[in-house]
Length: 197
Length: 187
Length: 194
Image (tube, rainbow over the protein chains, first blue to last red):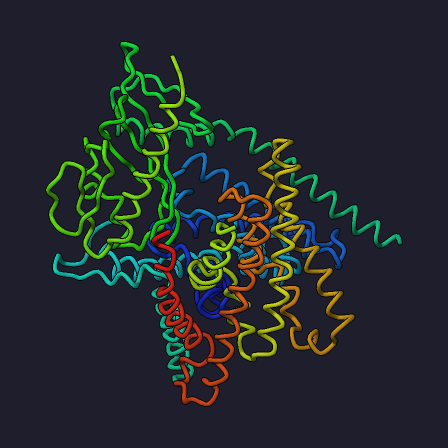
């Protein structure tokens, strides 16, 4: 259970481990985009971790990174093709960031740090925890940016008519700043928790 | 040496397995992917010219444009894409023009990465509807103020560069195609 | 010729890999602490990126497309990149131990540097010619180096400032990057009249 929960908060891949920033900043212009990217990562991380854990004793040390990367690239390609086949609009919206999941440090990071050293069952649980953590992180960031930048979340208008859209939120600059503030926020929460113990 | 062989064979084996997996997935989904791409283009085209039932490709001195034919086999007009530099990145437009190259029937934006909330408004109906039926016998003009002539459109407030880019891209393409069509004999 | 110059300037400034497309953030946050390591990293990335786009273009257009295997592009690209990084690492270890020590763990991480794979993906998506791809790879690397160096300079100054504890490290770097991104936006209109 702990194995699953750690990815959701304590060892959050983005806010605590500072991994996988590229897609986090790029696709969080709208909550829907963040959700789909999260789904893609859940698929890729879970399957990749499973396979890596399956073959961990067979792969020689020197070539393991290359092998893991090829496996990850395969599952990412499957996701890319699937998006284009079943949700082409989303595929267009996420664009090049779907194939870029291959070099998302979270995936290779988990495969290397955990899946290559643990049982298949633990690896899958770890993968699910981390990727779900990643997904909610994406969703929060995307929702904030969409809310402030377009007045809506998932397309549903939430801000009153008088709200002036903060366009900078949808621009790259806004992404950096909001993420920076979120990480600082997480640091603060951890700080307060530490003081209490 | 033995180690190098082991390393290479494991990697090669994994690559081959993965390639087979991908080949399988691609074979299953290939048709859908290609169809979706076609549909994206067709949908835009249908919105601009709903009466066309047949689309024929036409090569005009190296440029690819599309003849739009209705169900009486009459030529309704032509469709073409045009790409050029916008404010941030390239903009790709899809336009439908009548058979005599006198009036545009409509314009849609296929691809653009303009500033959200500002330049990105070139994709909105408010801006694009100005191109419906606009006269293009002379170059289209983009004004910041209210329009007076039939070949003028009004730019989006605070997005003059993007608006002007759309007009410039269209004008260049229309002029280019007009010259090429006049030089070409076709049935 | 002007097309190539356009690609160079646009990739360097207007559509900078780091500040516009968010590629290469991990090393960007990790290595931008000191100017020397930032410079070394930037050069290594530029070298790998230029080679990656060149070789990638050749393999994609001359082999994959001809055989109808374009869906294998990602696997092929990442293998090319991984090999290139290995070679660069061996090269640096042999010729400059100082640089090797400074870059440390970050060298093999160039493989997962989204910027390199990103450059390859973009070049395919935009249908660049061979020369355009080489220039694109080179400018992408230079753009990355430029931002990395600017960031290193700023961070070295930040060392002397009183940053609140919760902001130390990643948060303040991210916010600085955001401000940099805003500044670079000023380059946007550079080519609008061409």
